[in-house]
Image 1: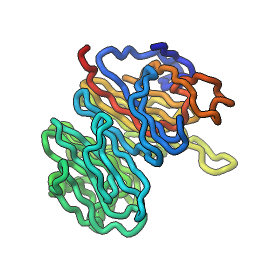
Image 2: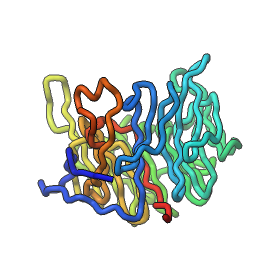
Image 3: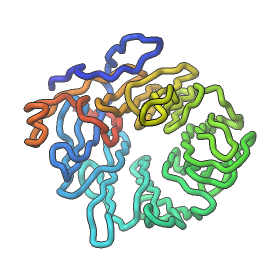
Image 4: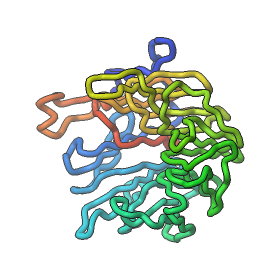
Length: 335
């Protein structure tokens, strides 16, 4: 399959030119909605193969990986609002009227974080393992949209909590050294290593809580939208304020990798750790996936929609598709 470096989005430190990454031991899948068909979602491989196309009226919200298997949260229209479903390698595992925020898969067990109505007053959330409810959360006390599962332990990020704490296996852990309620926080956990990215609200400064200590040694005026622990290193992704423009505050995306600052040309939509490697997705007018801060070459696909053929012709590089929905890294299957 032909791959190219067309439209590589820079992810640089000190202005260095990006060097393409080598990706030999894994497969990378990318999700996009409204491309080949305006009312469908598609999953591509990084080299341009079509892995899966949804049915009419379905959209892909989130991807997950477990070894060489891929999973997806999809939504579809219904008489009483959207219904959600989880796919495994393109086959439907289950459907639900509940809203699914996040999915993690470990050793074949599918964990989902759900609520009833994300557009109204949310009173409760639930964590399911496969189709069994294992936890219930009072959303007036704690609300989350991000989940981490490791060795069967479930950790939820504090997207809202009136006191500084995080949630694991139905119990709260107080984060010492922080005051005030927390909002819009993100979490990662590897063994006993816990990292919480905190966006400053209600008197609490922006920074990160790591293993019992709060740190604010981050770029000035940074907001955080993802965190990851990779081989013991702290990775933060977000944006920094760089000035004032005609339409308001201007920001620039940034990644802080083990204390080193990298500016990117697109919003960092997701961080993934695979072994000791860090992968991330940048979205802007162009899209790009990186491995250890180096761009992954992406393949070309056929343009089947006449609306886009007038703009791009018959073929397009995956990097030219703006705002990919999600991506995952899966173990390469043995041939």
